[in-house]
Image (cartoon, rainbow, N blue to C red; front, side):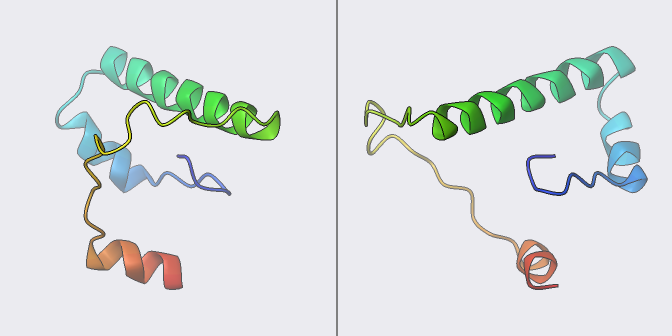
Length: 72
């Protein structure tokens, strides 16, 4: 949802529906959209991080299928 262009497949939503109610999916989607907006807005007007969380980041490992999709 944060990539451009936005492409969220029906199959992905079907997997999410196995774990979340429709109300929870609306809230989750809204939160992701808001954070994406906020991050892009801040970047566009030059508001950058102030290193308050430096060293407190837990990076997610890149999965093979993520690499395949980004190289497609």
